[in-house]
Amino acid sequence: MKQLRSQKILQRPRWSKVRALFKSMGYSDTDLDRPLIGIANSWNRLVSGHYNLKQVAEYVSQGILQSGGTPAEFGVIGACDGIASGHAGMHYILPSRELIAGSIEIMVQAHRLDGIVLLGSCDKIVPGMLMAAARIDIPAILVVGGPAAGGCQFDGRAADTTSIAEGLGMLKAGRIDEASYNQLENRVMPTCGSCSFLGTANSMGCVAEAIGMSLTGTATIPATHADRLRAAQHSGRRIVDLVQKGVTARRFINRLGIENAIRLTAAIGGSTNVALHLPAIGYEAGVSVPMTLFDELCQSTPHIAKVYPAAAPNVPDFHQAGGVPAVMKEILPLLHGNALTVTGTTITENLENIPTGDPTIIRSRQSPWNSQGGLAVLCGNLAPDTAITKPAAIHPDMHTFVGKAKCFDSEEDANHAILEGRIESGDVLVIRYEGPKGGPGMREMATAMKLLYGRGLAMKTAVVTDGRFSGTNNGCFVGHISPEAIEGGPIAAVYDGDTITIDIPNRSLRLEINDGELQARLSKWHRPPRKITKGYLGIYSKLAASAAEGAVLKIDSSNLE
Image 1 (cartoon, one colour):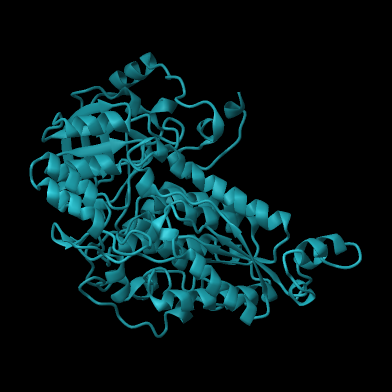
Image 2 (cartoon, rainbow, N blue to C red; image 1 turned 30 degrees about the vertical axis):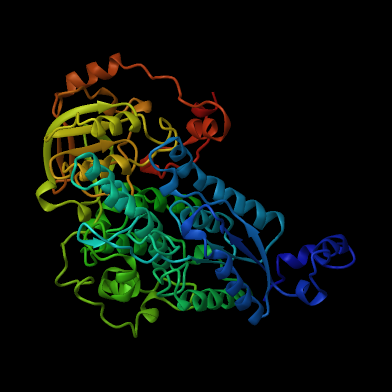
């Protein structure tokens, strides 16, 4: 084993000052002779998915100590999409990903840590942590807190937090009474953990496992199960072994791991937000992940696991059915089986003794729910640089939809129109100026979709946006439209009453006007002033790249002006 990074600043006599600072916190000479392993813990009492991470961290520390390492825990921010949804707070959620990556980079590099265990569960925290691991490229392993249990029965399935948004639409439409609606608060989420549906949080946990950055079978262990703590302890032991062998994060976060993760996402019908995060993670690892590759892998991977919002079962049900390992074993011929993982063995070796999954949730590759994956990349004159949708969560009858545009320049305007009954069957809601730069922050249009569902319009309308969507959305929706409106993309030139055609089978999104008319409209368009110019969002709105590039921060001459 080569000299540890930490030992370069802990050797006597030159670095006795550093040793003294550690000793002031109770570290001993024995502690300082061992690998110094960071635990980047995003525990807080604001985010349900992170509430159990204090205990998870204790078990990670146990594992590190068991294998001869020294744990050094520090805090990382983590914001809740659910709490931030539907108001100004959502502007901050996607941009928080870059801060998470940057803060971990700073702590690891400033203190010369030898390895890092990343503890997170929710939507932007897990990708931010994976971005940091790829960027700094030291030994790293990711541990999630696990999904919450499902709640009361509501609308034919175990409830979750999205049931409240759906219930609000039902209340406004007179489909349920106020007492029934108020009961949901206490019953939809009976435990802590990441929300029990297959949204971005659980999708990204599954992605981390598929890439090889988490132990096999750990992505979907429920938050309250004892296995969650045993997996944390095991991860603590594994990180010390990775440090001793000098195996760094880019041994897993590479072309093979990322392509495996895309195929896994397609096979389970994961969140559309994965199409934002994997390009961003690849960017940090020096791996290009264009949307053309994303769609190629999605089209050639069958959709074999159905989890809410594609079907009634939730993520704890999916775990019980076999989870990520059962799915990966079914699609193993499509995967890079030689890809290495943090277990110290390859994907193929990890899956050798995995049993077949429960066929009511996880089907075989030969008899899938759908021959193509759960995500799709669309192109056309309305989205020249691509857009993203999730056919796994869209009823087959809605895979092709033609309707008349109703245009809104903010999420709030669209939500008010839905609640006030101004949206009708056959409408396509165009919600724009919500992209990475224009939002800023690329808010998700989850509330609009849930309100449409609650008002009985999910099968009669569609939403297209340069914003994004929650992993729980169903209905007919297309997001990530690029270029976004603030960059002069064609979505800025849509007028009320225009015909829009969504054609998922043919991967097309079209504004039904001729090219000459479209160019004439765009020539008259004037860029509106930036909504926010100060603080972190002011910086983000200047530097954020297109959604098609993962909405990462990029500095060039144009955004320095």
